[in-house]
Image 1 (cartoon, rainbow, N blue to C red):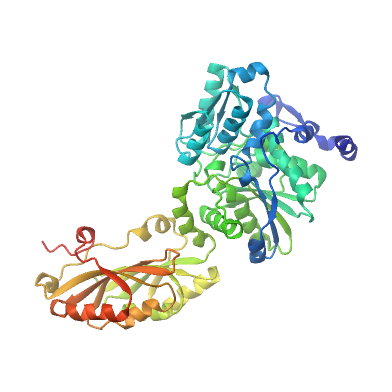
Image 2 (image 1 turned 60 degrees about the vertical axis):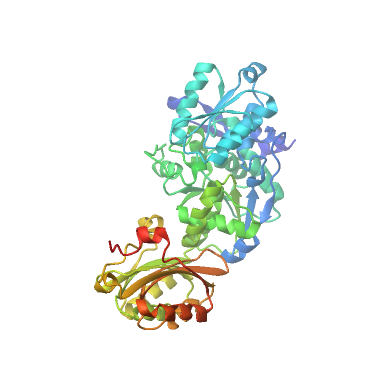
Length: 542
């Protein structure tokens, strides 16, 4: 009955969509897509995921934000909807032979779980770059896993060859009407679950199946709702294709958000995007990491990078268009996070929020200059501080520091300059963010005082309260004739901060240094005889 009224409400011209017959000879009618969405068999295996208010993020960006929690599906991703809907249509003979699929992980799990439910063989071809957790998850569902190629597209070609060779049905991850329809059931749920008038829905885009299905349903019922696709800057196949009005194949793609790392979108999904997607937003890895943190802050759950992509796009769009008091929905489409990535995510999240800035600062290589710099820093929270004495007139210090926003970052740079410190903002430099911040250091230059052993470099680890002023307390307690030769601090998000300090002390005055350590009251350990220090940092006097 619902479909009958739907057909009467919508003019025939809106139902039809013709694909380029010269490429694939497919004529797809919108009526068929809508019918397939309404008839999709997904709840044999999928749940109706909740639409949850993001209380903290809503306050943070002055808009009402909801998360459509597809990360709560049995395989922690929306992909099982389309996979099962397609496979539930297989004939008995097709089920007997089995299926094959190519996937970076989430579609693979959807196919594997569906095959287990339908009692058929499943062969999954995955890129060798797929996170181990996703590979093991697929194997745990008794699917046969073949690792091939570095990208989804190479795995796709391999799976096609297997399909032809072994007569297995290929289950396409996105460019199949039944798969698109399965994903489209998310659109039905959003409209049913929302008590508010939705202004925009943000959807991660890889091959386009998710946005194709949701957009087809939403736009035919509520065309005023904006459908906004989100891609990574280094895997923006749909963005570029829509800009040029033809499918563009990328030469390579970034793999951080591996779930959407697709070089070429589908023919069917491209046409659906052309018709129904209002705009595309692209974001970088730092913005994705910040959005993983946003979701964690709200729900205490860790999304995978592709799963947080829609949130990152939502935030970027709010800033770009200065949106306020809107009702916005982000599809949190996956939570298959590889644990080893958490270190990277945590480190880059503050950069994505523009809450951390990194600077290279030049100071005179003389006693007291480090204390002068700390006075300029004042009560700002440091996230990292690296210094190693050099033999030149000036020393170069690397610092990470908390800032409120980009304007605050620029103001701090101006302040450094006004106090005579030659400084360079490295916050947007990828080489620094990935490598250089961890490589600051080197050996202590050899001097006459070290050679005749009148001075000795001591190396200590300290733990101090993680609060503004703790570093200044340490520096102000030091005697002027003690020279800091190495200093490294990095914020680890704990109540206790840890620093490594190298200091040049007269050999006959080491007892005074030890008395200072006892008086300062910070927990410490002597690392002067640590073999790693001797190998990589200490002066080579031999």
